[in-house]
Length: 397
Image (cartoon, rainbow, N blue to C red; front, side, top):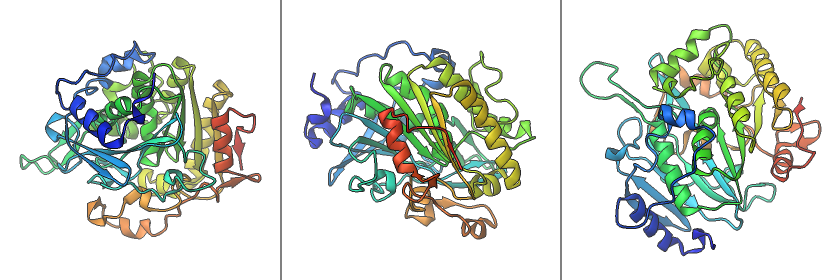
């Protein structure tokens, strides 16, 4: 059966807009029961198929779908949410979750509006970059604009004036984008779900919805600087954040250890246990400045120790399906190659806490060709992961 992406872009934009907008177009086939049905039944699937597209655009081969906020998807301060789609030259699908901070009541550094253009020159999004192993993939790009790591489902009136100050609807935003992905690319050969920073944390729960939408394909999750760590030694910190953002009801009741020792790495283990077609490729620096210093506000040495310990538990349990690429130092992310992938080009849409501007000046962003462990670049290592090559190994500096 020919895939829908072979239609002209204009025709596909119209078809998806009609189907997601509640017209008489036939709906996408109902998904099969999921290996993660427990989490879907707890509420993770509540927004699937609910979003309505309010506008579409075609910009030089990149389609943008904007959703009606009244149907669920929305950015933090009420602006509409939208995703971008670019057709590639392969039958493989690449879903990318943008980075850009996180936001809770005592700390907020986040993007509050969805970018309207695809930052195509970032390393992993650049179709003309020879060393980019994802260059030919069909792409769905998920902007990040609510600070909830693509999983939140809560609204907050922080100053008590009766007006919502933080609308954190990451779960609805993610679900809406996946509805578009499933209609545009219903039968991909395989799927890569990647995210950087806040988007990296987002991949941990997003993998569950991706698997629900695509029950049969091989799924490679590329977690770029979002390893699921909270504050070492402070078990209540991350639990409090998850509760405030409305994420904790999605944690599987059968997995009391999914948030253990103050981290959500147990949820990664749950995913690997339930989904035999899931593999995970993790990148981090040992002392990631953005995660350890800016967000978690813990000593770099404590972050280093927790990173090695928590991910080591995962590789010990699933050595063939979860592998790490860890570099020395404090660099943040490797898929981007530039800070635009974290904050976009509209600084007015970035919410900063007091004193953050000084800290942000110390950020160093990695790149796929400059992150090197024992003579191998991350780009080469990721290509090996895609190919299922023995060269995809647990590579620690």
